[in-house]
Length: 461
Picture (cartoon, rainbow, N blue to C red):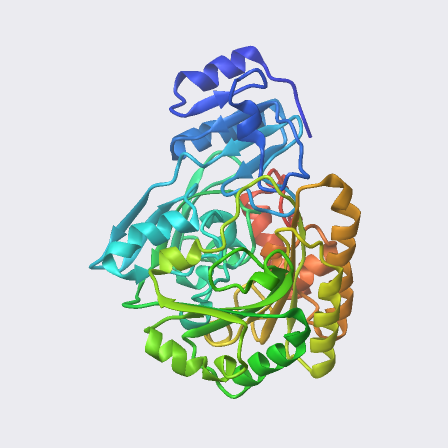
């Protein structure tokens, strides 16, 4: 739904608004409306860059009064570009990026516009961490509410597992704080139910000590892919420690020192390993992979914040992706995965990845809406290119890999990595019909008119 901007209402909004209000004639409007995916080109009628929770309250009430479609932007990384609307109201949380760390209590208070990198950097002086994404520019809000998988998940669980409370502005402009003690059913829904229930303006996270962290990168020619993937699979099936996370990635090899010159700007296979511990411990855990004789290698102890930002890319790519969760990784699935990499756009910033799951992801599954947590592997094509003429080819590759993996995959997926793939897929990702109906009941209580619909939407029950 869209509506017209009433000048009197706009003046009323501006009176006590501490942030920035942008109309299409504002000099920063075009930059502010651009989300990560360059395929998305939407023009909001108004952008409200909020400085705090009260600004969000005012913006939500303004949007309701004028009948505007409301989009909520934090990091702006969603594949579908749900952080921006055409002709409606874009609530931009990015100015709300404060992070306060209490090292004694081991908790962090995080504002709704903060990125995973903001959190990691704030915690770094205390050698404390909580689970963040594999890119530091990812917004904490969407990441956490969609589950929140990253390098630390096998050790410390998903981001939502480390939630202690969430402050939320609901569809009537009210403010609630959800935790195990207050609004517990809403708190349950926020563990994977996405942005369906309101605008998350503040989070409280549990923190964990991490005295040392190690990153290892091993590069191989692409034809060695099946051998490498099988070795990684066997390593985890034999009982790899929870401290270890490994991604096997087909990509365009970058011009880095550890990359042999004959692989630079060509399709290559990268093993990206994270270890929550020292380099000596990491080398021991990764010994079966070093034995394969990579063409180039790098291993070093680094801060978690530096590791998390190692693969950051600039905005401005055309972006399409999906994901599959696999209970097992049989040889046939390995072969199909490796064969499909030949369809990638090279050179580009695209990547085709198998990542280890298990560990605390499964152990802390509980009854949360974030489902399919007993999966052993996450397979995801992350398509990024700059030329619109590559759209058809890039999207076809993403969909083809999904079809390749479908015989081995769970019905649901990790919802943060996909676009809108239909109601059946959404319900499966939320744990099936029973959990979906429970989520729908929460939706009916906190957003009965489905004001917050730009997401993997849950219809009010």
